[in-house]
Amino acid sequence: MTDKSDGYANLVRQTLEYVSAEMGYVRDFAGDHLVKAESPIEDLLFSALVTLVRFCDCEYHHVAVPSPTWPLGKLMARPELLTLIVEPQAQLEGWRVDFLVHAWETGRISGREQWRRLIVECDGHAFHERTKEQAARDRSRDREFQLRGYTVLRFTGSEIHNDPLGCARQISDWGSLGW
Image 1: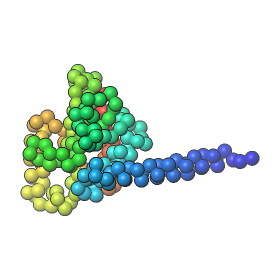
Image 2: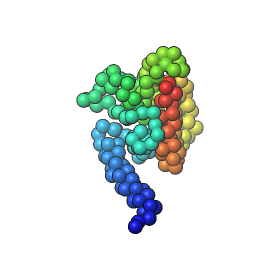
Image 3: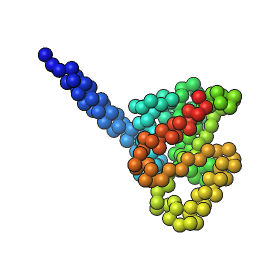
Image 4: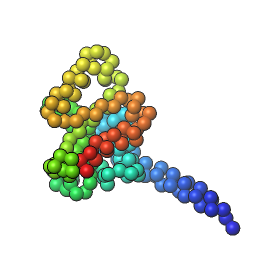
């Protein structure tokens, strides 16, 4: 007769093996040419977002990246799929942003059904806040976007490395505000 705790130990082992194999998929997905992350912290944050949606308690069922097969318009035509749409290295009003995230708002809060957009910036020390001028430029740009109705979330490289799922959860939480 085997101890019941052996079954749970086996379940934990099998779950870790499954998640590890799936993380290989997530890493491949984040590393292939669908996601044009320009830095390791952007790659890590995107991988964490995919992991959160696939394995954790989350409002969303999918993370989608526009592609030739599924362009942005086609993805946005299906809000019922509960998809968080992520555009890496998006061009927006003359600027390049690390990620432009789209989430469907069902109108529970605003009374309107619409797509909301979030700008996510990943601030590695090499390109942000090394000088007062760089910090001032980033803050000025954030204010410009906010005045145009965008929400901006800015994460430091340390935040992303120390708690990638926590950063991804904040993006998901922003998206689910409209539910």
